[in-house]
Every structure is written in structure tokens, then in C-alpha cells.
Amino acid sequence: MRQIHPHEVADPDLVAAYAYPEAVWLRVNMVSSVDGGAWFKGVSAGLSGKGDRRIFAILRGMSDVILAGASTVRVEGYGPVEARESWRDLRAGRPPAPPIAVVTRRLDLDLGGPLFTAAEPYTRTIVFTTEQAPKERRDEAARHADVVVAGEDQVDLGRVVLELRARGLGRILCEGGPRLNAQLAAADLIDELCLTIGPQLIGGDAARILNGTATQRRLALAQVLQEDGYLFCRYVRESA
Ligand SMILES: NC(=O)c1ccc[n+]([C@@H]2O[C@H](COP(=O)([O-])OP(=O)(O)OC[C@H]3O[C@@H](n4cnc5c(N)ncnc54)[C@H](OP(=O)(O)O)[C@@H]3O)[C@@H](O)[C@H]2O)c1
Image 1 (cartoon, rainbow, N blue to C red):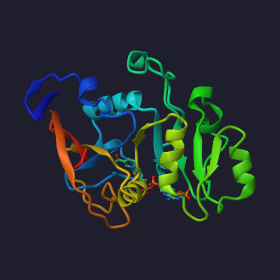
Image 2 (tube, protein in one colour; image 1 turned 135 degrees about the horizontal axis):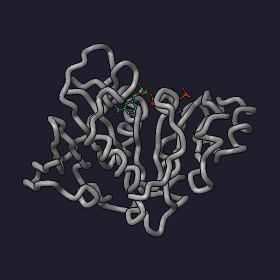
Image 3 (cartoon, rainbow, N blue to C red; image 1 turned 120 degrees about the vertical axis):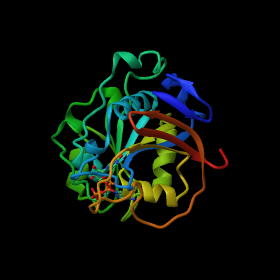
Image 4 (tube, rainbow, N blue to C red; image 1 turned 30 degrees about the horizontal axis):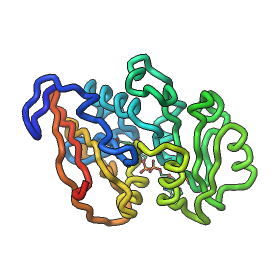
């Protein structure tokens, strides 16, 4: 891998390259095709590559919590994050792996699946849901997860961020999907976007990495790495 912006570095230190600028920070990490698609055949795997998977894992290892929309959790088959030996230094003074926090209106999730039943105490899943989720689903989820009702019909994402920070989980890594990202951008909650652009055209009807409310936020291009035709860009909010 090579850094090509803001200056050339051969084989950059990825941990240093992706260090969180602040302990309270919301980073979104996404991969896209050159023509802007956020999934291929329904999932993101076909857009990714070796370098992207490496950065994906490092970003997970650096985070205090991973935030995802319910659709991403369902489609991508999310389970609890497993600790990696390579994260030992990265996570010194913190639990060995970050928990998953999922945003869901209806709580239509596999409550008997690993995300709920196989988490370690330190990766106990956090669920942000609404009054619209049936009471019995909320009660069932609460057997294995921390359930927070954070809205009547829609989860208030500002409340999500404050709640996570109150739990000491300030370094938030949002892994999408596009509908969650669009709301975070509209609420001006995104401090950084890590975007992998894979060297392929896919056409089709995949959403872009933000899908929903129109919004305009200026970002500054902080860093670009390159490997095998993939670009790994870091954009930060312009004032950051
Ligand atoms: N390219 C990438 O890097 C990348 C990353 C992630 C995902 N993806 C792809 O993106 C697709 C999924 O993304 P998506 O945009 O369709 O969905 P998404 O953002 O992952 O999830 C949308 C769902 O999240 C819940 N939700 C979101 N905001 C909410 C709010 N404010 N209040 C309550 N619930 C809320 C709702 O869940 P309920 O339906 O449970 O009520 C909603 O249906 C998949 O194809 C996945 O493979 C790609």
C-alpha cells in the first residue's frame, strides 16, 4: 500500500494513518464502486478487496463501538465482533473488541442468532429502537442485549450518539448502510468518512453510500492511500 496524499509514503503505518483525531468522533466507513454503487448483488463483499478488508479490520479494532442499520445487520449477517491478537496494543486499556450497536425501528432481527446470543459481556449488543417495535420483541431482545427506546417512530440519532458517549463509547465507527448514513449526514453527526473506491463499474440500481434525505456537507480530503487500483480516502468535516 502507498500513501499518495497529502504526501507520498511507501508502505504507510495504517494504525497511525487511521488514528482517531479525537476520543469523541463519529467515523463512517464505506466501500463503493467507481460508478458510486454501495452494493453488488445485494451485499458489499463484491466491491471490497484485500486492502479494504485490512483497513476495515483496523478501523474496527480502533473503535469503541460499531454502529449499523438493521438492514446491513440482516443482509451482511452481523455477529459479535471477535477480538484479534493484532488489536492487543490498539485496544490497551479497553475491552478486547467493540460491541455492535444496531438501529432498528421494528426490531425485526434474529434475536436467537449470534449477534444476540454469542456476544461476550464486553461485546453485548446495543439495540436502539422505537415505540413501534412490539413490546414482546423488545423484552426478548433485552434478555441478551441492551435495548434503548430512542424515539416514537424513528430512532433519534442524536440521542444514539449521546447515549453511546455516556457509556464511554466515544469513538463510533458507523458501517452503514446508506439509509442510516444519510440520516447521520442530515443531522450533521458525521466527523469523518473513510471511503474505499474499488476499480470497477457495476451499474444496476445499488444505492450510493448515502441514500435518503438530501443534504450538503463540505468535507476536506485528509488522506488518500492506494493499492491494486483501489483508493482509500479519508475525508473529515471541513471544520475538523
Ligand atoms: N458499501 C458498503 O460499504 C456497505 C456498507 C453497509 C451496507 N451496505 C449495503 O447496504 C445495504 C443495506 O443498507 P440500507 O441503506 O438499505 O439499510 P441500513 O441503513 O443498513 O438499514 C436501514 C434500516 O435501519 C433501521 N433504521 C435506520 N435508520 C433508522 C431510524 N432513524 N430509526 C429507526 N430505524 C432506523 C430500519 O430498520 P428496521 O427495518 O429494522 O426497522 C431501516 O429499515 C445492503 O445491501 C448492504 O450490503 C454496503
